[in-house]
Amino acid sequence: MTKLMTKMPIKTMVHNLIKLSKKGQGATLIGIGPMSSRVLKASFELARDKDFPLLFIASRNQVDADELGGGYVNGWNQRTFIKAIRDIAEKTNFDGLYYVCRDHGGPWQRDKERNDHLPEKEAMELGEKSYLEDIKAGFDLLMLDPTKDPFVIGKVIPLDRALQLTVDLYQYCEDKRKELRLPPVGYEVGTEETNGGLTTPETYVEFLDELENELKKRHLPLPTFMVGQTGTLTRYTEQVGKFDFKNAHSLAQLANKYDIGLKEHNGDYMNDFQLLQHIPAQIAATNVAPQFGTEETRAYLILADVEKELKKQGVIQGPVSNTKAVLQEHAIDCQRWRKWMEGDQRNISVEAVKSDPELSAKILDNAGHYTFNDAEVKQEINKMLANLSCAHIDGDRFIVDRIKRSINQFVEAYNLTGVTSRIKNYQD
Image (cartoon, rainbow, N blue to C red; front, side, top):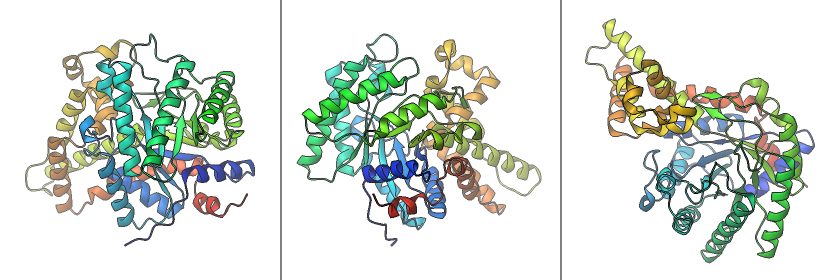
């Protein structure tokens, strides 16, 4: 059995990273959305070979308690998610640092809760139940995000109300953790919305000051990360935002005064020009999720085309899979793509999508990963991989390596190679 190093608390790890950044030896961490077990495998293999810490950021839609609806990623709840992570770490001989993080925890963070317009009391209770399972399972970081209130006109609740709900969630989680006599966890607060929230240094420092005051009154710890808007925005499979170095650097400096790291969300599909600015901006971490699911979807589609070609050439003898058609049908039917659409397209009917080949392909590219756990999708993928194996093609290896190439773009730009050793060896 692989012996994992003694876990450095995430707060300590980020503290050391902030100090290293001030010496010009820092890096920007990457929060990886656990879109599938193959994404986990790719992450562990790359982090093992390049010596950097892993942050796995699971939303409530992806991973949650069975009684709350479970998650669309492998049907994982908190305990089975952590078991899968540990198993893959062992299989890949990973002996570095990894952290299991709750991304966008709290009320209304499951699509159904928001769509059902649950009252605040009920939504808060469900969010707390989810956090309790996170804490029991051993999550290292909890994002406290009460900003998805469906009753608020527009997208962002007032900062004073967001602050109060955040502190209430903080108190609940800390009380439960202490009751269970579990080690400290890290916390992430803030919102990345572009039309309000923590978009300017003025609102950012106001929130930080008020948060510090409230936490001190309740004898609660300061957060590990605070989210701020750096200009990023993901739509379809594109980065449509404009990275704002000046604003990002200002927010990072303000957060660092409190020994808190600036966390950027919506970091998918950025180019090297944008990525290379993150270290001088002193951004502590970037969240990336749908990009890696899209890379896996694209790998399946390439393999499906290869399978058909080898059938045509007589290399594959039996019937081929129907991977592309089944994956496309399930991707459209799941309707989770609506959150990534713009304007009136968010309300387009499923029938209209299916009658539009170009839009159908676009949605498959964007939303295929939501369906990897669907029984029919898994059946077709497994059939395809078996056919390719008979033709001496290791499809699983191709998929994992394709995901690794995508993650590695961030590793290179973010100076992540060797950062675990630098963090471990750092002395105040």
